[in-house]
Image (cartoon, rainbow, N blue to C red; front, side, top):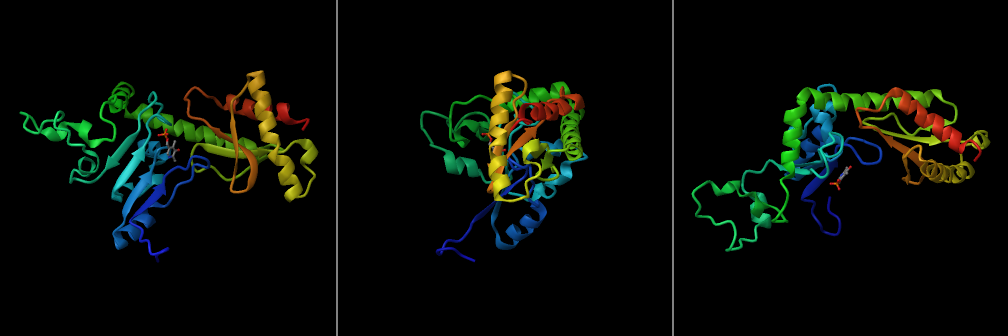
Length: 263
Ligand SMILES: *Cc1c(COP(=O)(O)O)cnc(C)c1O
């Protein structure tokens, strides 16, 4: 199919969307891309960390078949900002061919060593920090097992929070979490008897911003909120710190209720 005569040449799938933490089915998308000879890129900036976990890596099943991947170890793995990897399977110096400025005063080609190690000419920027080193050093220091536990723990905490939300009156999950994103509404008692419909949505939309303002002014919590696809504002809780406990997550729900119950 073409739109206005345009022919697609690449597909961008997402492994771990920013808001909901949802994963596209990479294997199925790769089948289509192979059939039509399309470049398949996966934005795994947020979800790529699941690859560290035996239990959760199935979320990115098929990722070995794609042409390129973006991954931010500075998110769930908590490498200090910033550390963003762009991985390409290409072996034809694609990045060099795209970005090289071939400045005659830099990156001489007649040096005594293999000049393919000169990475500076492959990126848009020239002078830059070796961000990959931070990840390498952290991986060496903590070990693969510790990084895996970080991911497993974050996802276990997300599941705990989702279960706690299901048990509480006035709290409603948007969807069962696929990853570490737990998205939910808090419905104050005054709105609980309203039938599902535009009047309730309109009132509910105003709740999260007020609760957020109150939690920030009190200094007790920082939880993001947003609207999405026409739905009223909801809270989006993402936990990655290994120091967060189940009690802390229960406190989040207690605090939201205590700050919003009069609305
Ligand atoms: C965070 C994120 C990005 C970009 O993150 P930077 O930290 O700006 O590199 C891209 N895609 C997704 C899905 C993300 O969650």
